[in-house]
Amino acid sequence: MKKSRVLALLLVLTLIISVALTACDRDGEPVDNSNNGQVEDTDNNNADNGDEQNQEQDITEKLAEEQVIRENLSQEPPSLDPQLSTDTTSGIILNDTLEGIIRMDATGEVKEGSGMALSWDMSEDGTVYTFHLRDASWSDGVPVTANNYEYAWKRLLDPKTASDYTFMAYDILNAQEYASGEITDPSEIGVKALDDKTLEVTLKSPNPVFIGKLQHSTFFPSRQDLIEEYGDKYASEAHLVPSCGPFMVDEWKHESKVILVKNPLYWDADTVKLERIELSMITNSNSIMGMYKTGQLDFTEIPTQFIQQYQDELITAPRASTGYRVFNTENKYVSSAKIRRGMRMALDMTKVYDTLASGAVEPAYAWVPPGMAGYDGKTFREISGEALFNDIGTGATQEEIKQMILEGCEEIGITIDELQNKISFLTGDSDSSLKYGEVYQQMWLDNAGVQTGIEQATWKVRLDRMSEGDFTMAGLSWVGDYNDAMTFLDLYLSDSPQNRARFANEEYDEYIREAMSNQDQKVRIDAMVEAEHILMNEMPIAPTQEGTFLYVERPYVKNMVRLPILVESGKKWAYVLEH
Image (cartoon, rainbow, N blue to C red; front, side):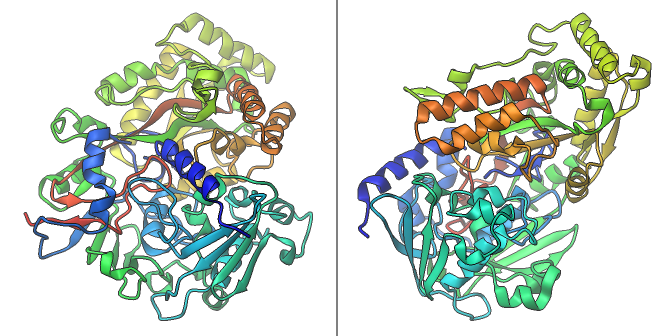
């Protein structure tokens, strides 16, 4: 094998462009921020993240004696098992406590030596990567080996694991076949530890995006010995969460707080300045901002009702995400596409965000967010169309919406009266989520003639209910994993574990499979454009907002890494100035 510098350069350029985009679930409203997605003003973000030189610790300002950062997660992380985690709340902790093959800094570039891989080689045809790992230890002193990665990735694909993120590894030879049960011998998967420090990965076809995916927590290592010892309890309590990253879990008081402390055995411990990270789980907006005002939080996503009050401190950052309503298409009352479309069209999202978010959030009228790669100098959004549907605020009328709902009722054999109070909106348990829900509820009644309910629940409960199909309509956001529309569109393949809508459409599947199997960018994009149009016509999901990260942060907090994709608040290089 030989080092492919040309492809590495192309990959770096691809990822630089993509830093505007972890595909993970998040809550659906810009204020209920604990579960999924990311946003920011470019100037402010650069100041926060620092440049590469700063991350190499060229610090001339005086550090605070106490190197502690206090952050609000808003709610309990559903899982700290990297192969089972699906959300960004958990991802924040996993990114700070585990080390992937690579670790992205504020530039968003893929760099050899940035993570557990000191270097790598690639075959001339671009299908075989050989990663050479550094000497490193877990927080209990056990050496990190290539087997930790082989085991983790094969565990991800094992049908017994029932991971929702198996699709992330489908670039790997025989990964999809093993996950689907088509083959049963894990040795046929293209992942192999050649020795303790060498990991060989074989792809089914060249994919320059693949190596950038390795920042995702799904590809973080796991401990086979501890999983065999603890079983389902692995990573469920502080003492059961192993670490090979900059920090380790010191305390986990469920539904209350998580405390991270510096990992003294981390391979790059000298670079880490923070000694402690205190993560709260506060949902009440007044309490969140009260804690920020009194210095109990150093930064926080800002509930939108406080935007005007904190406009001088407000930082906005781009996030490759889309907020949306997801419908359970197997539920009789939302099984008609006409009912689903009518419910979305009844929402005046421009008015909603002008009123509740001071205009700081942009409504969405398509599924794939702006900025995703296309071809011939155009983005995917420019090729597919900026808006694939209207709502009551962009030209739709009450008359056509109500007629569409009526026709949908006829399709499923019910009257409009029988639809009343049969659709309930499942949303977050914060006061902000309730406020948004009540606005939607009134718009559905006024513009569609449909009475709806509101159900509030914690993030974990909502994930469980959506997985079990125990809902009619829910609010979510999805954050991209890489700079390609596929990171959004493959979610709604009929057999996708992330298909919470239970949507099944053969034509849609055919277009996505065509895009997956073709290396011609124009052919791929054109197929995905057709798929997106089907998705928006059938509307198992109804986009409502483009991704934006709204937050406030103390000026003494420096070098947080916030990328639109994969890293929401990385703290390896962060530090606190004297204040």
